[in-house]
Image 1 (cartoon, rainbow, N blue to C red):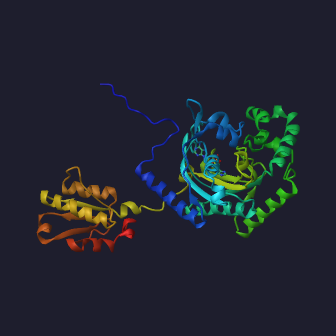
Image 2 (image 1 turned 180 degrees about the vertical axis):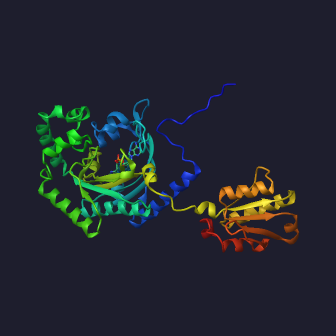
Image 3 (image 1 turned 135 degrees about the vertical axis):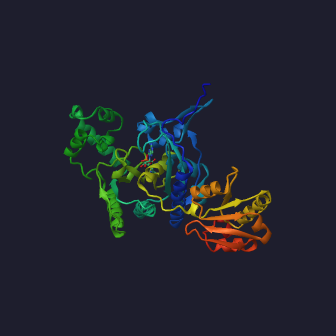
Amino acid sequence: MFSLMFKRIPGTKDILPDEADCWQEIEGISRSIFSLYNYREIRTPLLETSSLFDRSLGRSAEIVQKQMFLIKGKEDIFALRPEGTAGIVRSFLENNLDKTYGFSKFYYIGPMFRFERPQKGRLRQFQHIGCEAIGSLDAALDVEAVSLASNLLDAFSVKDYKIKINSLGCAKDKEGLASRLKKAFRSKLTALCQECRERFDRNVLRILDCKKEACRQAAEELGIGDSYLCPECKSHFSQVKKGLDSLKINYVITPQLVRGLDYYTRTVFEITHKALGAQDALGAGGRYDNLVKELGGPDLGAVGFAFGVERLLLVHSPQSTVHSKNLVYLITLGEEAKKEGLKLLDSLRKNGIACDTDYEGKSLKGALRKANDLGAGYVLMLGEDELKKGTVALKDMASGIQEEVSAVNLVQALKGKICLRPIAAVN
Ligand code: HAM
């Protein structure tokens, strides 16, 4: 009979348990590093009013124009969030955090949605690990953000990444740059790619970061450098560079880096990795000094960035197989041992020892094979003999050495051999 197998939607991903272990590792490292910098977690809804993104990212931004998943409500249009910054600023203001906390540092881990053509490293649902620091114009905060991003990558054991930075200047500088570009490119439109010809009307700054050779050359010929920056923005950028130098962070000044979201002002940065191919950005961010005000709040500067977890995983090699090595696998022989086994498992788990047993009715040989496949560090064997003696056979799967341990001392014996789950710390 014909039966229908459902498939996942293109551009989405099933994170199967082996990969989920790596996700947990990356998320765990991120949480501890963010807390070293005094960032606290914030969780905002996946759904927001779509106009929040029109207003923050800009109507002409590619994400707003083409990539939002929209849901029509009765009176409003909702969007699956394409990024985290706008929702966090919305939440910061709606919950009056500017008044209760003042300067605030947030981090977030969660899914984002963009209707893009799927390819390696480009999904329609992907995960951000990001942070936002709201309430300061201090250049030292830009330095801290870039160094935090770099420390996170080091902690994920990502090597050979490249940090690109630029300054877009304040809103006035950006306007000035846009009108200079309009003047300069108007007579060169035919030399640009089709997309850049559209960008000329929609968002002329984006022509600068086009990867096509002809557009790149046309942009280079303009020789703009940092001449569009006002003295204050020039000085801010110079403080950022000096701060990064003092921390010995390697970066490349990249005048073509303009970013695709309207809210950026002054410092912008992007971290790339060659191994990613066409979608080479592991993460990106920058300053957005006008967004809080633009969304109805006070005049507060802010900086943030986000990494794409799927891209991090393409360049990171997992460190640990701690989960499986710490697993204890119980094999029981006979009905009585099975009943006792249930109690034994319960007591191990209550003591923070991860364990499992056979629920498929396997033979001793089959159950041992299963323990091996699971990567269990230890196997416990409980049969009639052991029950009579009040013992358990404990086998070290790496060395093959087997010993007999008294059932009452089992927890103690295992605690000396394996790394415990967090519950043990609580008990
Ligand atoms: P973004 O550059 O749009 O910035 O995204 C940040 C990162 O998310 C990218 O560098 C990339 O690693 C990942 N990413 C983006 N789109 C996709 C996709 N379709 N599939 C897989 N990964 C993707 C932002 O979203 C800003 N909100 C960052 C920020 C925070 N700026 C200030 N604060």
